[in-house]
Image (cartoon, rainbow, N blue to C red; front, side, top):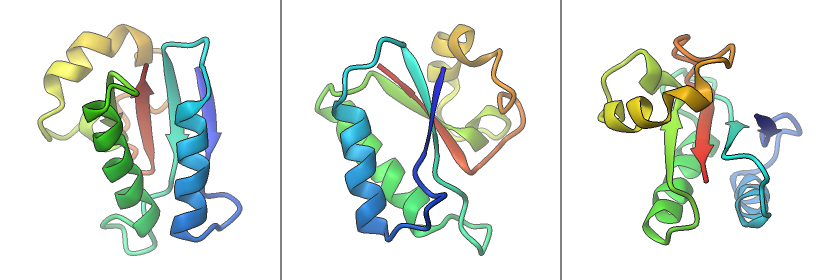
Amino acid sequence: MTIFDIKSTLPTTEEAKMELMAILHRSHPEKIIKIIHGYGSTGVGGKIKKMTHQVLKQAVKSNTIRAFIPGEATTTLMGYDEVIFTYRHLIKGDTDFHRGNDGITYVIF
């Protein structure tokens, strides 16, 4: 699984969005990638995290990606249970799986 960190350079939300869009439009040999977006300094979801999930929802609607799983959805009921069950075999070996890491999101192609 390839990991993309879109928050380590402390980008603006718009810069992070441009990077995320570029990542999504590259062809990936893997079926799944992990995006590190951080969780926001308040602990309730930062701007980059919210933007990431908004972009990914649109990507699902436009068939750019198959699905996405927020890190916290692996330990909290958030409506992603079917997606987690379907793609569990792709993420179960990751160290963040079952940790409830709200600073990451899995993207399935």
